[in-house]
Amino acid sequence: MKPNCNKCKHYFVTFDKYSPKGCRAYGIKTSVMPSQIVRQSNNGQECLGFELKDRLKNQKKEKDLNDPKNW
Ligand code: SF4
Image (cartoon, rainbow, N blue to C red; front, side, top):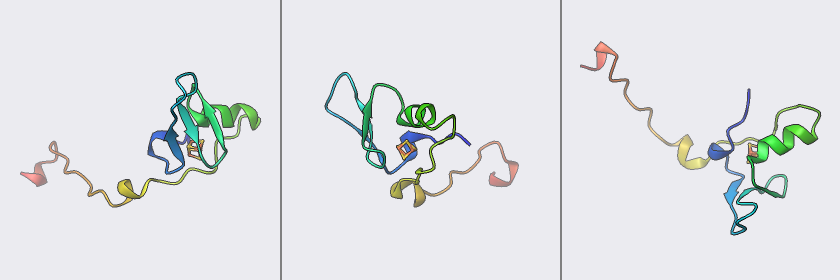
């Protein structure tokens, strides 16, 4: 499965306007998603360092408003 850097605790936004996306786990700054660089430099293997951000772990699951059980 393709990791979503936006939801990863290692992802950060840099102050470099040419390389605004960074990954602390791999120590890279880039203009594209860090997972894309990791995959390219890792013979097509997806990043294995993905860890869900703490605030997303604690987030309550939202109700599905299309489910009649919720009405
Ligand atoms: S560890 Fe992987 S998923 Fe997380 S920010 Fe870095 S490249 Fe993206």
